[in-house]
Length: 128
Image (cartoon, rainbow, N blue to C red):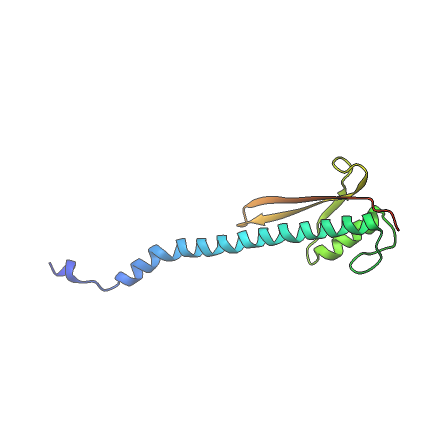
């Protein structure tokens, strides 16, 4: 009976049972927040770069002075920093305008590779 009444070390056992699931939950939340941040940043950079190309803007954050793919790609890379993504022209889904497709490969939980993609298309706006 004395063995059943002794509760020394119970908190260590409870901690061992609870610590791993809590750490996994916290790490998973951080990884999910990172992927959502990358998704939002990629959409922002692609939309802004396509808009800069469509209106031919030269003001910040637009780089260059024309609506070329290299200027849109430079603008997208500038806005997507500190990360580096892959940006290509969006010719398949953007007829009559300027578009850009961006993608970024993220590693989740050190095991899974997730590719985040964003695309944008803006119509050509002639100067007044």
